[in-house]
Amino acid sequence: MNIFAMLLAILAGVFTTIESGINSQLGKYLTPSIATLHSLIVGLSFMLLINLCLGNVPRYAKVTTVNPVWLIGGFFGAFIIYLSSKAIPKLGISNTLILILAGQMVSGLLIDALINNTDISFKKMAGMILFLMGAVIFLKG
Image (cartoon, rainbow, N blue to C red; front, side):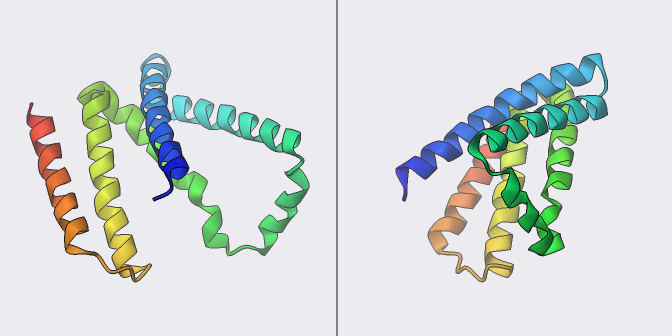
């Protein structure tokens, strides 16, 4: 496996934890929907600045040529932020994130098997079962 890509994935996990905690606190003071909106506006502004600095903005014209289905990711991103903001005050950050990871593992495996036609090895299936068992133990602890 690519070590750099693995480090990027780990960093994304760290940022997910930080963002979840910040958004849940903001959601307590405002509302989860306003916290979500604020998070997305800040993210939009940041990514626009990065793309301006990199000179990528003209490439955005290609967006009209892609399959419209690939343009709905922000919809799911907004729900991730909103649902996390609602769950964390009741479950805590670590419990919420372990449940998010469980949902990601199961749905990722299903997508790989059913949509990407990837063979699911016994090792992967065993690993997922062990992870889910660990999640249950973690949540009961």
